[in-house]
Image (cartoon, rainbow over all chains, first blue to last red; front, side):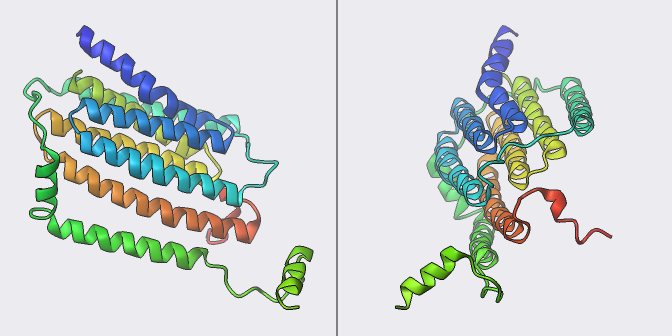
Length: 182
Length: 98
């Protein structure tokens, strides 16, 4: 039981505190950095759960890719003076009530369920994982690749600047155009 | 380290994600909350793969791929929102409301 408590505290520090900062931090860029901390903490938990490959993938794709992408997203779109924003108190109260209710219901279900039959077992090695991806889960693997391709293409199509609407160009754009066609 | 503590931590993460989803008004902040929730789900998959031997690891890989795709498209939508309204507050995009 003390091991359970110790692990709970460890997980709280590794994952809980950063996640709390993610949803309460007023500054978006800091929120993203706290998200990176959350994801790294989760990678540590994966490693403790004997999933070293998943821990590596988590660090590479999430912390390396998604967080970088989000930082770009904020940097490109933010108004430089107004990255912080306020949350009104009624919305905060409603959100806290909903989240607390969800947590209590699921926690009650967890405590009522008998988990004693589930004992630690050997997790699949990276080799097993690779073989299962190309054998048992081949269809899902291919569908995931198509999904990623579709996401890339759609992101490019959505974010592509359309032909500019004829209108007053900014001085900077005009100057650029002048410079490019002397 | 036990399964119950892990499940409670994952539930707490998911609840925090719900809180963020309900209180935040910035589109990027919503994406962050969704990331936290997806992370909680992945943690449960890995926990049950360790305890009881459910085939959770391949599922986590697929879930990662889906989340990455979601973030890519979501950020493109945020960029569109910004171009159209000059900000990324979600209540600006209420034109389709009935």
